[in-house]
Image (cartoon, rainbow, N blue to C red):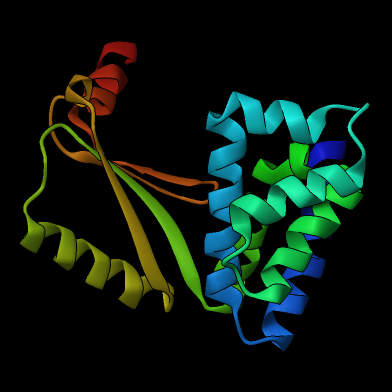
Length: 174
């Protein structure tokens, strides 16, 4: 809970800065890159999390890695180091993306099918969902053979289950 609040607070501040600098997407890519490095590189994670290493040394290390970035992006990384918040980078990135989607009327939709839909089927589904919701749809498709046929659509907290598995389960419970 606290981690989510921290992520939200930092994401809001960072997003505001990104908007004022007109580099919202670029900063998202930077944050995502930092998150990926933090999650995959043990040496980087150990160094930035180590309590005995001075913040200035951590910043210098980050500058060597991210030195080619715009100054505003680099300053965000430095700020996160200064506040010991790189360990919260996953939550910050997730919240940043939520803010971006909300401000740009983008909706994350997860679709689960028994078999991979064709490009045309995906395009038609996106078109129908965009028409229904009035928002741009970011569709993630996954395959789960256990649903037998049909599909399950998840939009936020709403689940539309049109799978044969659910129908069979409903019949079995009757």
